[in-house]
Amino acid sequence: MDAFSSSFLSSTFTFPSLTTRPPIAPSSLPQIPSLNISAVRIEEKQPQSLTAETSSQSSKTQVHKPPPPPPRRAALPTRNIPKKGAAEPSLPVTIFNALDDVINNFIDPPLRSSVDPRYVLSQNFAPVEELPPTECEVTDGSLPPWLDGAYIRNGPNPQFLPRGPYHLFDGDGMLHSIRISQGRAILCSRYVKTYKYTIERRAGSPILPNVFSGFNGLTASAARGALSAARILTGQFNPVNGIGLANTSLALFGGRLYALGESDLPYSLRLKPDGDIETLGRHDFDGKLVMSMTAHPKVDPETGEAFAFRYGPVPPFLTYFRFDAQGRKQPDVPIFSLTSPSFLHDFGITKKYAIFADIQIGMNPVEMVTGGSPVGTVPNKVPRLGIIPRYAKDESEMRWFNVPGFNIVHSINAWDEEDAIIMVAPNILSVEHTLERLDMIHASVEMVRIDLKTGMVTRHPLSTRNLDFAVINPGYVGKKNKYVYAAVGNPMPKISGVVKLDVSQTERKECIVGSRMYGPGCYGGEPFFVAREPDNPEAEEDDGYIVSYVHDEKSGESKFLVMDAKTPNLDIVAAVRLPRRVPYGFHGLFVRERDIKGL
Image 1 (tube, rainbow, N blue to C red):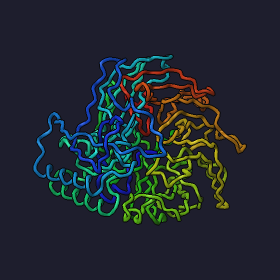
Image 2 (image 1 turned 180 degrees about the vertical axis):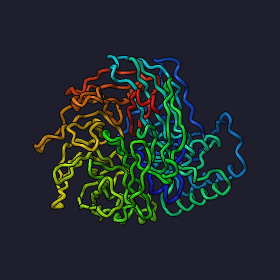
Image 3 (image 1 turned 90 degrees about the vertical axis):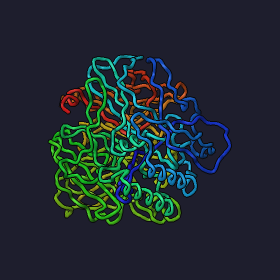
Image 4 (image 1 turned 120 degrees about the vertical axis):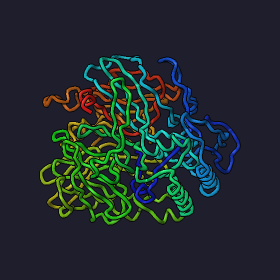
């Protein structure tokens, strides 16, 4: 799934995730009981030409077959790489880093594959260094003239080797942008310069604990919590300045572009004329947003308003709010009828309502006591959908509907019908594996109908395939749409292709009407739909292109694909060879040139 940079843990512990390491080639090295790695800066040689092969060792490894966890590998030799401008570590920093090593080696070593960096950061999940704007080569077809702007995709890319446990969602946010103009393409990869990234880069080592992998069990939580408190007291970091990763998604509203992660405030961005990406800073909307917000705000294409929320481990567990067309934040609407902390990663809007899913993932103290994650499944809980008028000033009109077995992490779209609300979303059928074994997740796209008069909820599947990271034509957010473009898990988090679904079919049958598989050993990410004529009200809904980064694990080469959304085979219109590999990531956005100039 996504980088759920969990608001649960960020609110509870007030620290975010951290650090990472370069790929490790598989070998038959002897097993060792623990990690013993000091801070290491990730460095990757810049490409010499368009045809230069990446230096990543991960491209030479075999594709992992998920069911059996991989054998444990030996740790890398300890080494330190000084950074330009980095001061010598102070005595407190040196002492705290040594204590951190003790925690990671003896108290809470990475024993499970889901938090073992040798497993999590293998192959094309391995991080890369920043890449300045670099010309790309169009190898097949040609880039359409209507594709004028930048496709930007966010994802985790840890700055340092993990000192111990590391989860896929724990990496620093890196943006991979391909700027397209007049048939030319320029790739640029830049970290989001968050407060966490900046202080750790300056220090030359990790400072903040990993949120998703650092608080498993009471002993580990107490140890890392005490160490973090000591770092705060000695001035190594100030949590008031933010602890988030901004590694999940992007949003454009109110004339600003943001990098988002739900454990912190948004970070404002600017795209330079040469294709470079600049982080402008943490944005609090004139002091009106003091805590985190979702990484999945919904922007109404007709009004320009943005709708959002935050969630956390203390009441109110859910708070709903919106931004007007100029990007000004409106007052909070706390939702106290959500009586226990739930994992609310995404939601839906219609022209009349906002829809929230109270699912079977939440705070699980029993698991934490026994050494598990503080975020886990709650098997005896009945999932619910809650609806509230989208311009509500309080929760007096909030209504909840039981929907047994319906656990969604992402929402695709929702709309109003006469006396009813329709929602389309992937239902996680194996919710118990959501955080621990992503490879065992199966997501079935379903359509849900809530009858507002009778209170009856009905649902039916639209496809039997394992589908997630689904998108629509952005011009149809909040209103009835016909087509959905979804990533095919093979298994998650690897994406083997993209399919097109027709959700308007009334017969209960497979709704896939178009498909493009990337081929053996090739994997992509979330597709994104770019309308050919977004300002033409007469344009057909599927008149546009699907874009995505795709990586060939055999050759080590990454490409940017442009596909024709109207064709049954999603024909490739253009393929762009990238000057170096782009790691797998999370969510993206296409920003048109006119919007770039207005930032």
